[in-house]
Image 1 (tube, rainbow, N blue to C red):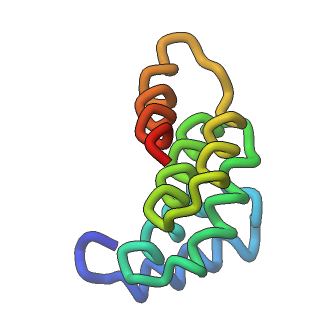
Image 2 (image 1 turned 180 degrees about the vertical axis):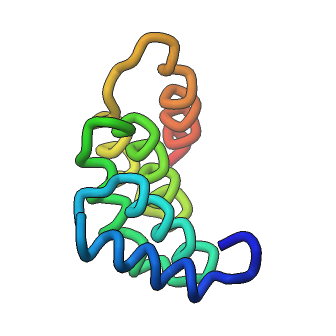
Amino acid sequence: IATGKGAAAESELRKVLAANPDDELANRALAAWYISSGRNADAEPLLVAAASHTTQRYRSSLELADYYIAAGRVDDARRALDAAPKQSGMSKPVKARQEALSVY
């Protein structure tokens, strides 16, 4: 996607997701492409799907929270952060986002 071949990458990611809709990394990658292309509404369901999986759930939950923060959806961001798995040594990014949300 970063090489300027976004349309081709989008097509490939859609094929991956058609074959395996639970592919967390493909969901996150396509969501990132949509966000960078200004297609935020298309990105949200992909981020939600990615955050529901277990392999990278922590990172996906943070990305979902970041999406909600950027969209001004504070309550949704808080829920995404609350749902982030508690992992040893990984609470600092969650706390930083929670502190940022405390001003709302």
